[in-house]
Image 1 (cartoon, rainbow, N blue to C red):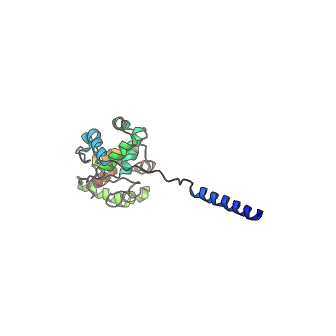
Image 2 (cartoon, helix red, strand yellow; image 1 turned 120 degrees about the horizontal axis):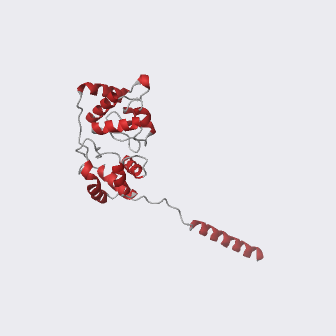
Image 3 (tube, rainbow, N blue to C red; image 1 turned 45 degrees about the vertical axis):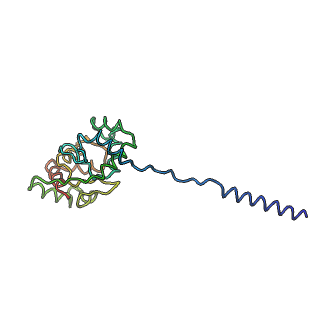
Length: 212
């Protein structure tokens, strides 16, 4: 009888242990909130539209087109304006007023808007720009822009921004800033731009403006 009682107790303990193990709470991955496009549209209209256009297609060559840009890239830039990793006094003021959620909402809304095509202006320079964009400059170890930003300028989501149709004036300003140390939030672009002269920068920017 003692043996039977011991077996019954042992079985009960084992059952309780299995039951307890089975009932342990499962640790689920935290849910990531989806961007609120309605809020993004409202915030964009209030904060960004004056410079970047109501639909992200800036009408001023000094301000970039944001329509169809990769949202991850836009969020990164806004965060870096806010933290001073990317230096721009005007954008610092706007970005500082935005939370991470605001940035995400804005970025995901504006990427749903279709970018308007641009066009190249200088026929002589655009040939040089195409050569650099597609093939780089071998003797100076300048890589082809297309390698990262794709042949049609669409870029690679989460990694490299869309360039297709971007204002040439804005592209010139950014490449020059990378080269001269005014913009320091991409070591890769600093190294590339450091090897380009003014004429080459202008040529690449003009070619980019006409990409589609």
